[in-house]
Image (cartoon, rainbow, N blue to C red; front, side):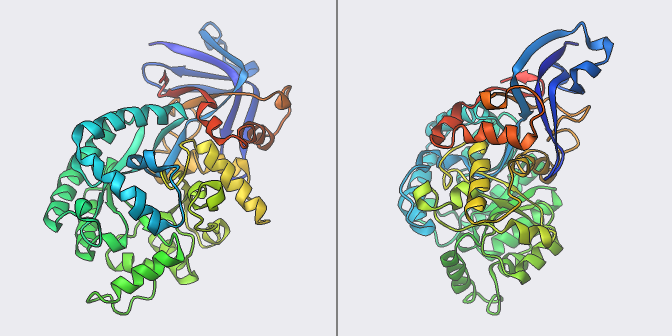
Length: 428
């Protein structure tokens, strides 16, 4: 069994406030098993590892590989389209483009290219929305390299003709995929307006039986909330619903394996329900950012309120509402938007944690992934180190800030920030 020794400056996230820094760091891992045997200071490396083949990244920084817990792989080509508002962007650009994925050759070609690029920017796991077409889910699972949960969007009402499925077809796909992929499948009502409540309730029962995940969208904009409540209060059994969260609650969608994108406009009562059901929120700062920053202008997620109320959350790119694939751009946006709003506590250390270990916890894979604890998989990224963090003794916050801010003025540069992506000990 081949074991390798890597020398580098290593950042190992532990929590929102703690990230260990090993300036003269060393990591020993197996290429075959992909397992970490040691991570720490080089001077404390056990002698039995001194003779191993050494991969010298001494002038580089190593961080855990990243997770993106909310993105639409079929929206890659509309990332940079004009975004006046969420609902108009969906109808003008997103839905017409997703309809193209009906063509199997087109879908397969796009999946092959997209997931290769995704690995190149350092993402090796997350929660994925496919189009409603069966093969678009299969193609995502075929080409995604890493630990992903994937769902085909359910669209049975209030959708364009070319993107509307029958309730029978929706149930057939739910039954098939939940049984076939189980914890790698996510029941995916696109959002409440496009999915019959009967389908959500049916799917939730099947998904929970097969230990699948559930994902959707929640309280992204105020117009969306008004739209949802206006629709559902006309549906028998929902006449008295007080909130968007209550709609999902009545459909049995909420739970510990449910990931809800956005959650910007949540009332105290809604947060109470999310906390009680252990539902997770996936914050997508680049998608929610102002239009001038190529976002949808939806607003700023209140991470402090969610934390006070005991709601777990992590970060996502929301491709294509988000304009760039790199989670480093997402981290930058999270910190900078909160800084502009004079909200404390949004640090790069926190952003890294919410894109690595916390994300792995939400995906229920933290026992083997998320940071560099012994016996976890060797999932890591090799990054260039700016001259400003030469020498030793710098905090994790300073190192991360220097690396991430380096590309802030030209955000497309984040696509080439990662020199190497390793997944389970193998360089992709």
